Image (cartoon, rainbow, N blue to C red):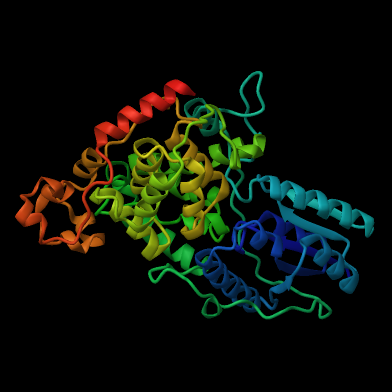
Length: 457
């Protein structure tokens, strides 16, 4: 009886899964394997919200495999060591895995290759599983990656993506493939109370509802903070319970300006992945414009604490930060606003904000989180690195009636309309009625400081 192994990583689904299809085609039996890697925890990426969502995903994947006569094999340890053990126990000779883009993924792949080949087996790494287009599939002349989004998008849109694969009908798993218990969300502590449900079934259901009901209005409404017309599919893309390739095909089939705008966002995701694949150091270091004069010290620490707590005195920023704490997710416009405020108005190192987001975001994807933070901070791929988002203007533009602010900053619920964005303009006697802080910095002062610091760098 021939046996293959498919190692699931950031691709926790059965639909449109090239490594799984190849593993099933290569052998009579297949081991669907997921490894709980202590190295991920040691690197600081084991945030409670993502562990809880991951548990949902693994439970759902196991159930879907059991519906097809199989089961998920879960082990704990170094992935290469676990794969070697599974190969020895089942006499497997092929191992299939999706390609990753981070430095950690590259090291894991190298260890897997060495281990599998030492055991007399073959490692097959599959592209276009985590992203719609593989990193490096399109490159500009004279470089190994695109550093600016617009020309990347132009080339990306010209490419023909592979067609989505159907989920398998049958999966046969060898008896000798022993498994640890599948994790459960209930075993994870410190989870945000409003964290969404994980798993392929939940992801596909959400995608179908959103594509059917909200895609048409996405182009005009995706920045609307209270309307929240964003897809909220980013956690499912991060864990791979949804295929980016399949989403592109489904959106394009639906057509219209909303579809084009949504596919453009999926292209942004691929763009960041190809940047990180080419420059893995961008996960921790400035990608393009190096800044050396970030604020530090007691005053900076107090400002960071106020920003994390949603107590900066700027309601739109505070609403976004409180949504993050409650849901483990934040509206995209809120992310841009919160990041610009921390890095440019407060002039705090982008890594401080990126780390806090990774501590809470259920969709805490290394490529997108780090490179979006760098874009906001002016150290990354933004072609206008000096732009500064004004939180008052942003609030008035994207939350004109203050609905989003009042939802997340209940202290200001008594204020009506756009006045909620500038509570410091109330009379002193009226301000005393609200348990809300004064602004921790004047916007003009923050702008002057940012410009002065940039002049030193």
